[in-house]
Amino acid sequence: MADPAKTPTAPTGAGSSTPVSPSSDGTDAPALGTDAPAPGSRISRRQLLGTAGATGLALGAAGGATGYAAARSGSADTADAAPLTSLGADTAMFHGKHQAGITTPMQASGHLIAFDLAPGAGRKEATALLRRWSAVAERLMAGESLSGDTEVARDAGPSLLTVTFGFGHSFFGRTGLEKQRPVALDPLPDFSSDHLDKARSNGDLWVQIGANDSLVAFHALRALQKEAGSAARVRWQMNGFNRSHGATARPMTTRNLMGQVDGTRNPKPSDPDFQQRIFVPEKPGGEVPVWMAGGSYAVVRRIRMLLDDWEKLSVKGQEGIIGRHKSDGAPLTGGSETTEPDLDKLGADGTLVVPINAHARITRPDQNGGAAMLRRPFSFHDGFDADGVPEAGLLFVCWQADPARGFVPVQRKLDRGDALSPFIRHEASGLFAVPGGAEKGGYVGQRLLEG
Image (tube, rainbow, N blue to C red; front, top):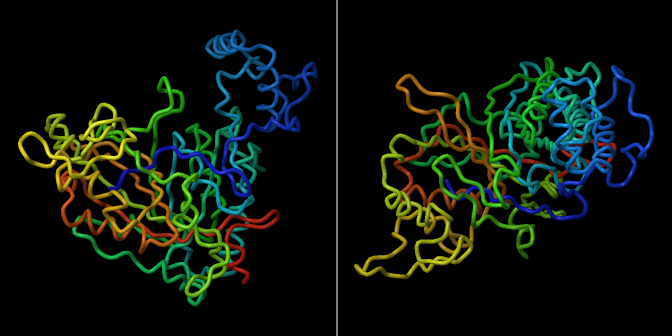
C-alpha cells in the first residue's frame, strides 16, 4: 500500500477537472431580481443551483444562517435560501483530453463498481451501453436531471461528480477485440501479500464514481446500474469515503483509517514528468493502441487494514513502521511533512532513524528506479466479520501510463519486506484500461468500439 493520494490540483485546459462554478459564466444562474420558480414547480438540479447561487450573492453570510434555520424548520421555501457553502456548485468536465476522476481533487464519497457483459452480449451491445452511460454521466456531471429520474439528488448541485469508465482484460475477448487489447493490460503478477477474492476482482467493465455529496454519488451509481439493462450485470461493488471538505481549519493531506497522514509524496500535475508518468502519449506507438491515446491504467486493490492489531502498537511503534510522525506526517529525521527524509541518518544508538523496512523508505520513487503512480483512494468500512473484526481499510486506486513501470515494481518491493505488511491484507484486485476523454457529441471508448 503505497502512500495514497494527496489532493492534487487539476491542470487547466482540455480535459481539466478543476472545479468551476456552473454560474461563473452567467449562463446558468437567473439574473438578480428575476422571479424564483413557483412553489411546487419542477426544475432541474442545475436551475435549482443557479437560483440558490444568485440568492447567495445578495444574502452573504447572514443568508447562509437563515437558510440553515429554514432547512431545520422544514420551511417550504428552502429552495430560495442561500447555500451553506459552494460545495454543490463545483463541477468537473465530462468531455476533454482525459476522463475526469483522475486528476480531479479527491472527493468525499465514492463507489467502485465492475460489470460483466451478459451472456450473448458482444461488441454491439457494449457500444450501445457505453453510449448510454456516457450520456447519463454527461448530464449528471453537469447537474442536470434525467428522464424518469429517481430524484435522489434533486436538491443538490453537481458536487464535483465524476464518472470514469475503464475496460478489463476479459472485455476484449468477449467483444472480439483481442487485437486491440494493450500489452499493458496483461494480468498483474501474483504477490505474496495477496489473499484475493476472485468474485470481487477484475471484470469486463469498470466504473469509478466520486462526488462531494453522498446522495449525488449514489444517484449516479443507481442511474448507471439501471442503464446497464440486460447488456451487463454487476460483478462487484465497493463503497468508500474520504474526509469532507472544510472539516479541517486549513487544507491538509488526508489521513487513512490507521490515523496516518497519507499521500504526502503523490505526484503533482505541476511536476515536469507528470503527464508522461500518468497518461498514455497522445500519439502512441509500438505496442500501445491508438484508442488509448490520452488514457491511463487504473490498478484497483481492496486493502484490508488489520486495525485491532495495529491499534495495539504504541504510537512510536506505528511511526517506526511508517517512517513518519503520526501527528503531522513529517519524516522521523525531522522537518515538516514535505521535508525529504534523510535515509542515511543514524540515531544515538547507531541505527537508522528511518528503519530499513519502513513503508516510507520502500515506497520512495528513488528507491524503486523512479517508479511513480498517482494514488487516489477511498477508505472503506463494511461492518464487522463473524469474529467482530472490522471490515475496514483502503480502496486503493492508482493511475499510471504503464502498470509495469508504476504499480508492479513498487508492490514487488513492498512484498519483499515492508514493515506494514503484517497489518494489511490485499483482498481484491483489478487492472483496467481507461481511455482518454470523449469528444463533444461522442462517448467514452468510441475509438476502440468503432475503430
